[in-house]
Amino acid sequence: MLQTASIADLPAFLTAHADDPRMGTGCTVLVAPAGAVCGVDVRGGGPATRETDLLKPENMIESVHAVVLSGGSAFGLASSTGVMEELAERGIGFPVESALVPIVVSACLFDLLVGENAHPDAAMGRAAAKAALDRDCQSLAEGNVGAGCGATVGKILGGEHAMKSGLGMYGLRLGELVAVAVVAVNALGNVRDADGAWIAGCRDEEGGIMDPLAALAASQVAADDAGAPSKESGPCANTTIGVVLTNARLTKAQATKVSSTVHDAYARAIKPVHTSNDGDTVFTFASCETDAPVDVVAVLATEAMQGAIERAVLQAEGAFGLPAARDLHASAQ
Image (cartoon, rainbow, N blue to C red; front, side, top):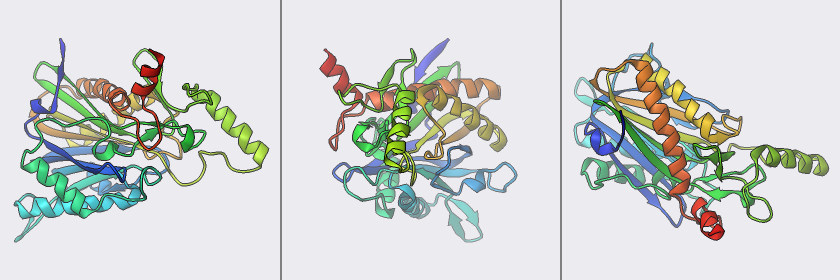
């Protein structure tokens, strides 16, 4: 029997956010003080990632100490430096003779055009790591927080037609097996719920959510008329970045396979997805406490991620002149 779960069901992991709501950016840190197995699958044409090559099954490192999700595009990778420094000062890391090197992997989304032109730095990353390690957060907040602080969706016709998104979390338990997904949704495309209804995305002139294929067609017509590239061309202004935390006993190769399967949740909930203007990334972070078939882990993780994507837009609040899903729902009452 499937049951809902939370990060509290995974004591091997500590989590926290740090953000600047005025600037519209932030980071989310997920720490495994004792280390945990990690795999990753990166899709889309514009990723901003750190140390993902270490996660290839053929490479040496078997244990990762933190995963960082951050705003700020490639600038946001600096937040991982602060996380490393905080971990090292607390004696957490990979031992190299007398030194300790914390293994910190990360992925960033582009939020530089929302709020102020700012990005998470090492100090913000350190603050999030400190909050996690000090257990300042009894539960991980959702919505306009952390890596989701400046997240938006539905940018096919440009940012003025977009909606505010955020960070979501959803977990499932099957017996002793637990999988909890955390995701910051900053997609080019629209987001739909489990029934297939669009709940956030590109808005038409009346403020309603357009079918993304209709928006894509309108974008191409406008570009042809103007003799210019369509709105979605140019620098990567999108990306959905997520982590599945699990207590499953996985190898690096299996964690990588789970990450690959979890991209199915992105494809179910986001349209279009994995475009050349997205840097979509999924990490799987496993504490290796519970035996379970890898396919069962992958299915549970995929369902959890789909729920987390939906919550990322439903928990968001309107900001920076952009409405959120809850605003459209309220206006329809």
